[in-house]
Image (tube, rainbow, N blue to C red; front, side):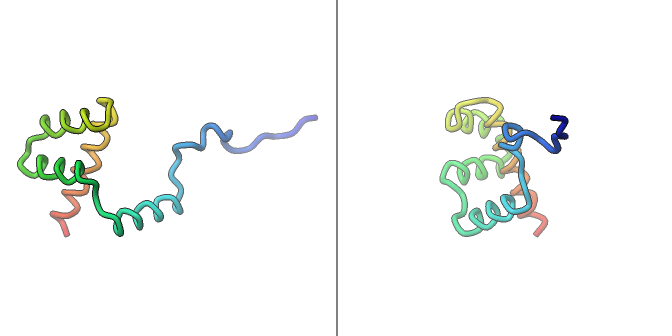
Length: 84
């Protein structure tokens, strides 16, 4: 049979962020707040110790790339807090 396959296959959908998942995660973050290691990292970023923050996150999260992503995420949160 000639059937047309549309969209992405299931394996590609794993890390995609929908409106609903974004909403849910934001809501959970609002209720629960940050983990202690995230709070400590934010303190390090406030006093502009970016490299130390990266090293700290790498110890906690295991890989360099995850640490970089988390540092970026937390510094974005800090800039949003400053604007507000």
